[in-house]
Length: 293
Image 1 (spheres, rainbow, N blue to C red):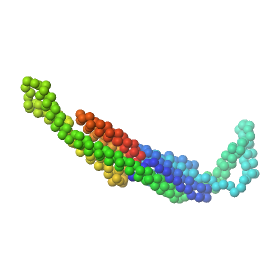
Image 2 (image 1 turned 180 degrees about the horizontal axis):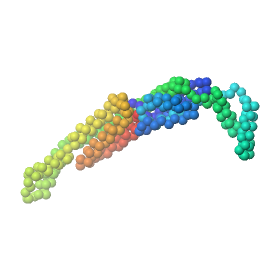
Image 3 (image 1 turned 90 degrees about the vertical axis):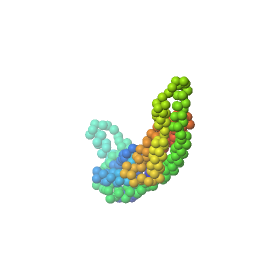
Image 4 (image 1 turned 135 degrees about the vertical axis):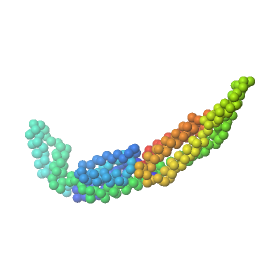
């Protein structure tokens, strides 16, 4: 089991400077990749995005690729004087009378150096980037797996609690339909008094009451849904193409539906209290499942 929350980082020394690749992920219903970089051409960017899509199924992905230029061996005083004169001349040609400050000169100098052949902003090629990206994605995978183990332990504990509630509901509702039918027959007899009651019609009403109060099918379906969810928690369907988290969402919805039906069919206060407890636990399961890939 993997969480959708994680972080991976890798660096490498290149002729252009130090390359850094960072990948941060948080939960999202689908795979949403946001890339931030000024060192990639179109082909390299497409290859990078394809590698991320191959590694991840779901999550909001913040991908940052940056090359930090190598520091100059020495300070080229003459170079910056020439840049300052060029900036001043540009201002005069535009009719803007100003003396460039150091920040402006430094920015223009960096831009001019980067634009020269072999400048520090030379575009990365995929062959340079690929191994660093794979290292960052492996670190991300380890981070998400560690988080996934914590989520798995919490989900297992909450699932066990839900199973205990299901057992308690089965015990509380055992014989509920018979008790409901008996109450109905007693009330009808008390209300009728000396007035005769059609035994056949009474038998039909009692049977209908017993059927409405019977929750056997709901309990069977509930236990089945809990087993399906448990198989996902224990790693039984990690090869699902759409990720485990989506399948968990489905089964949690089905489990909630059965608890709602149980609550609506039961007239017992203890059963209602158990269903409220189950819904609270179910909501916590939903919150955790939203973080699973």
